[in-house]
Length: 151
Image (cartoon, rainbow, N blue to C red; front, side, top):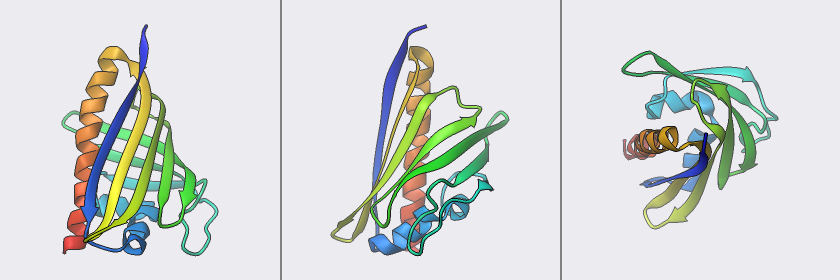
C-alpha cells in the first residue's frame, strides 16, 4: 500500500488571555466540556509542575459517533507552559500512523489565537477521509474552546 503524510491546520481566536486558555488546554479532563470529545480517562498521570501541563500523561478519549464509538489513546509529549501542548496518538481505533498534534497559543488583539496543527501518515484513501473528518472535528474543538470563553 502507498502511504502519504497528511496535515491538518485549524485556528480560532479565543477571547481570553493565554493563561486562561492554557488552563483549559493543560487539563485534559476539561476537554469534553468544551469540545465534541466524549469521556476522558486518565491512564497515567504526567509530571505535574505548577502552571504546567502533565508531560507524559497518557489519557483516552471516547466519543460516540454515528456508528459506534471512536477511541483515541494519547500521550502528552511536549509542554511549553502557556505556549504549546503536543500529544501523540498511541492507540485506539483510528487507522493512522505517527499522529501528532501541536496546540500553539499566541497572544493577539482580542485574546489568544489557538492553532491546532496535526500530522499523520495513512493510505491515500484513508488519509484523505481522515484529513477531512478530523479537520472538521478539530475545527469544532477550537470553536468550542472559543465559545466557552465568550460565555
